[in-house]
Length: 225
Image (cartoon, rainbow, N blue to C red):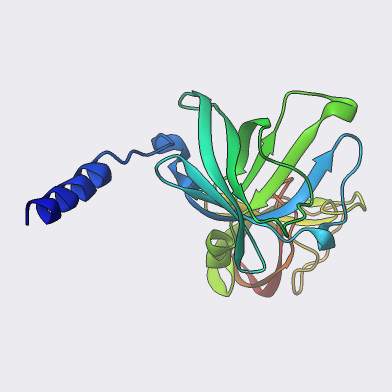
């Protein structure tokens, strides 16, 4: 009985000692993040070849998941953390021998930058050929915008024809999204922004990995006078 009691007490003490790795401003990092783009030096691998999920867990740990299997796990070493700055290193402890990573993440000192709590960038301080960056997106949070009818503001139209550039820019609450087409609305030189509207948002159509905003289908549009 003494051994059982001691064992239970040990579990209780261990659980009570668990701490949050990130402060309140960065606590949104906990959970699963899809690796959507890599920037290594002056090149980027094909996004279709990237399939890892990075999972940040409380008590200083992380997992990398690929094809529903944990292929790497380790510890998070927080180097510096303030209200608006976070740098960390992920230190691998266990790696599946069959895992062939798109790029090695463990051991790199990375800074966390985010434009919103659905998309983050982990990057180093190097430039040019020494640059290393990971774009991560949280699909569960982004899914909240899909299939939603809400008030919005059309705040601009980008004419530059490049990936994640061209199209309408829409403000939905604290979020910004983009779309290639809005029913009954045509971009002209005389159009005046912002346009207050009631819109119905469809599914996400293009993942821009937080560089500007993701694209969504706009099913319905009604201008509010």
